[in-house]
Image 1 (cartoon, rainbow, N blue to C red):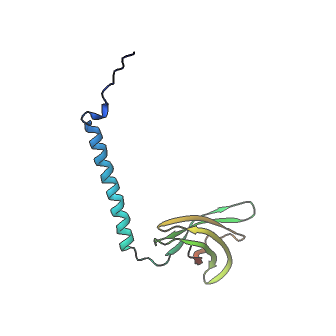
Image 2 (image 1 turned 30 degrees about the vertical axis):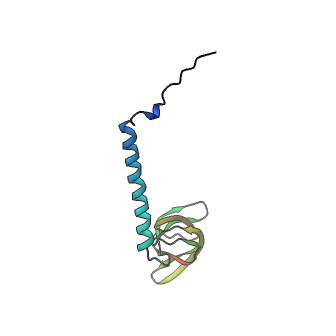
Image 3 (image 1 turned 90 degrees about the vertical axis):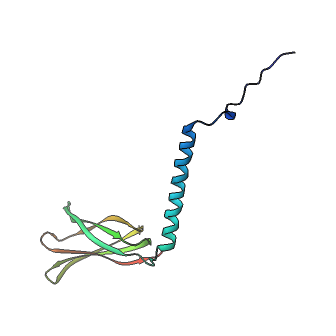
Length: 136
């Protein structure tokens, strides 16, 4: 018959201090996330998106002028199918319009898009605004 020796289980020894430190840090992080999500759930009163548009830059392309814009959502609510309208104005005279649709603009974020114009918008007023959206 063969003799076997059973080694002592290493887990029966006293835990190392790094295990306690890791457990404590993890518990603090989990508790902080739970508190943060709970606070947002209890205090967030946004009922609809808050969309604001602005021009980033204008670039000349081969057959058009490209207006890069961003739409910012200041609300926690997401907007989908956001229709964006760009207008080029000279004084109070409307020279050209262009429109596009953004798939979605998440809450507290921004989305960049572009409009193509036929007329040179340099030196003129460019207005970018969201005209409609859906609630996903």
